[in-house]
Image (cartoon, rainbow, N blue to C red):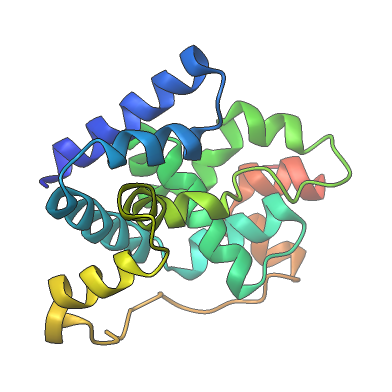
Length: 189
């Protein structure tokens, strides 16, 4: 599955969410389950590539501000949530995580005491496995197929996350993410 097809799948699921009255992840699983197994595996491969590309300190800092903190697991969910926003927002975030200060749910979330749900979308990470389970009735079918599909290429690649910095240092956060810091820390951009 090429990258354009991947984003078409995401966009179609986003559009189908409003029509079906279902959550995005439910529509995505249903949509993937209508595809051949090979395409589901290719979707998962593209998802992982895009997900991994957001594994950076600056993106994590944005998640930290938006979520009022962000553990390792929460950061996985946040990156899945960014992918669920679609290609345009994904590219904005990949280029400039501070651009999330313009996303409506983030703006609204700045006024809410419990912000943990804004953009943190765990179930999106499991869409491919959910589609396999729907097709086969076997919860482990995806992982067996994934291992066969990826083969020896399933190595743990070292990712360059950029330079680490202190997320609890308001001055540093304001310098690196001025618009998000203005929203969540009350600083001037």
